[in-house]
Length: 78
Image (tube, rainbow, N blue to C red; front, side):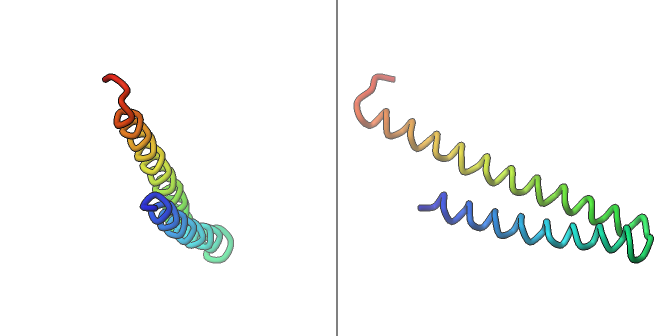
């Protein structure tokens, strides 16, 4: 149950940052012709992807730990 909450939070946060980054990047590239705004947008996009991947890794590793603990509780020797 906790994994579902974490996954939904990471998805929402990553998606929001991705949309902000894409709009900032496109604004800097086409509207204002500013290199700085485009660079900030690109950095925001990379940050959003990084946050999303770290959240997925956290959820996956937590599930592996839970499954290992369940196997050990069933009487499997260590």
